[in-house]
Each structure stands twice: as C-alpha cells, then as structure tokens.
Amino acid sequence: MSQSIEHTDKLLKLCLKGNQSAQLEIYNRYYKAMYNVALRIVKDTAEAEDIMQESFLRAFTKLHTFKGEVAFGAWLKRIVVNNSIYHYRKKQKKNEVSFDNVMYKVEDNDGIVSNYEFSEQKAQKVMKTMKQLKDNYRISLTLHLIEGYDYEEISEIMNISYANCRTTISRAKESLRKKILSA
Image 1 (cartoon, rainbow, N blue to C red):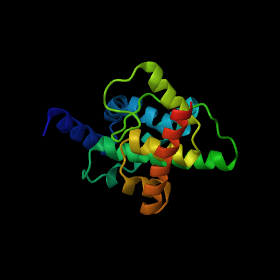
Image 2 (image 1 turned 135 degrees about the vertical axis):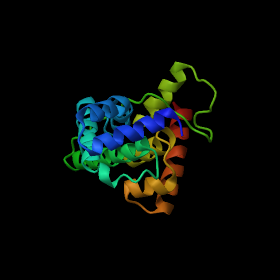
Image 3 (image 1 turned 180 degrees about the vertical axis):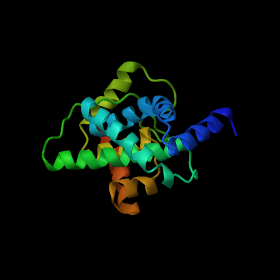
Image 4 (image 1 turned 90 degrees about the horizontal axis):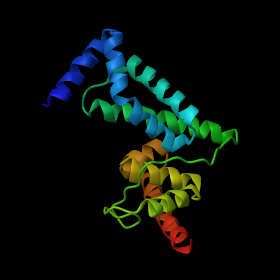
C-alpha cells in the first residue's frame, strides 16, 4: 500500500473521530476534482460549489458507511455525481436549465476524440458541439467519456435500464459525430 493511501486511511480514521484538521486535509486533497465533477454536470459555478460543499458534508456524516472496498476518492466522487444529478434534475423541473457548459477535457476510446493530442481549436469544437446535444445525451456522454463510469454505473446514476443506457450512449455518440461532421 502506498504512503498516500496509508496516510488517507489514517486521516479518515481521524475524521471518524470528528478531527476537524483531518477533515480539512481531506477536503483540500479532493475539493478541486469534486468541484470539476459537479461543474461538468450542473454547468453553473455557484451551484457546483454548493454541491461540492454539500457532498463533503454528506461524506463526513456518512463516513461510517465507507467500507474501503473502493478508493475514498471514488466513493466521494459517486456522492458528488449523485448529488449533482439530483440538483440538475431538480433545476430542470423548474425549467431553470442553463446552457453555459464548462468542461475541461474530453477523452474517448472509440473514435469521437482519439487519444493523440488535438489542437485546442478542435477540442473546443467538440466541447461546443456537446453543448448542443440533448440533456440526457450530454450527461450520459460526460459520465461515460469524461468521468469514466461504465454502463452499469451510469444506468444506476441516471435511473435507467442497462440496455437503455447503452442505447442512449450509442445514440449520443452518433449524434455528436453527425453534428461535428456537419459543422
């Protein structure tokens, strides 16, 4: 086990005892990544900040349920993603959806964006095009390609069947390809 993992485990044990300095250190290690995860889903900086803070509070209050079966960062990220999707859907029901989308990277293993470096202009074109996709396509592609979730995890997060998830992602990729080629 690496020193970083051992140190994180010690910090988490201290957090369970209510040690605020350990909580602050855990927060400082993960807040930027968790903020970016929330921002990619809700597309609003203030709301992403709120979600990130709320997710840390939830994580610290539910830390006793963390079994260590996955890395703490992955466990925390799941909380942030679920919280972000909940807030996004809540906002969507109120028709307050903002179309300002800030995303920082795009990764894909099957043809939309290759693993070699793209010029910034081409990457921006892909990001701009993703903004034009239907919400369920954009969210499913973000979770799959950017956040790295598999179909099973995405189907749980989005509360859809596994088959529906695969179909949605496939259609989202095809829609993205068509939009990129026609632009």
